[in-house]
Amino acid sequence: YEDECRKWVDPQTGLEWMYVETDDGVMIQNSRTRGCAVSPMPKGVVVIPEYINGKPVVCIGDNVILHCNVECVRIPKTVTRFSGCASYSLWNDNLERIEVEEGHGCFQSKEGLLYDSAGKTLLCVPHNVTEVRIAEGVTNIAASAFDHCYRLESVTVPASVEVLGDNVFFMSD
Image 1 (spheres, helix red, strand yellow):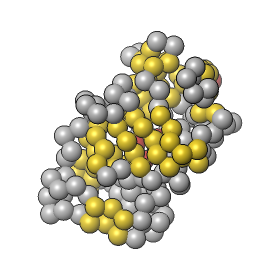
Image 2 (cartoon, rainbow, N blue to C red):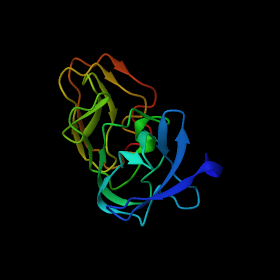
Image 3 (cartoon, helix red, strand yellow):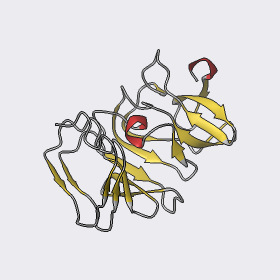
Image 4 (cartoon, rainbow, N blue to C red):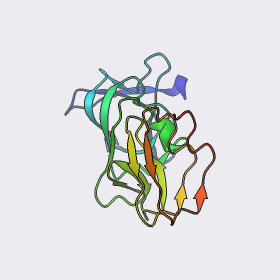
């Protein structure tokens, strides 16, 4: 995708986003030369745009906020997938919260963690958390959900969890 990346400036925020067009919309895509899909690199809260040039942002590529000083990322209703696993797409050592737009058909957020819309699968834990309490009723923890959670000290897992994906705690202390 590197060669296909285009730039779009959000008229409301002034942020420039890297993206590629897909069959069903747009994927926010990191550029190897920038280390982040958005510039100037935002701080605090970053809101993934819903639309770029009239096309819905349907996918978040890998490492889109990697070198940004972002504590929270907000995902709009238009995003239906990640290019790989969610923890690679949202990899950022400063990330403390993931928020999802209300009424999202594919995802939800509980206490800053990313779940599927049914609340049955934990998809991603922000990398800068120290304590995690997985929601009651969760039955699956997705592959790499805790990937690179270096500061993690405590995880509470409900008895409802039946399936652990591959490398759930990869590169986590």
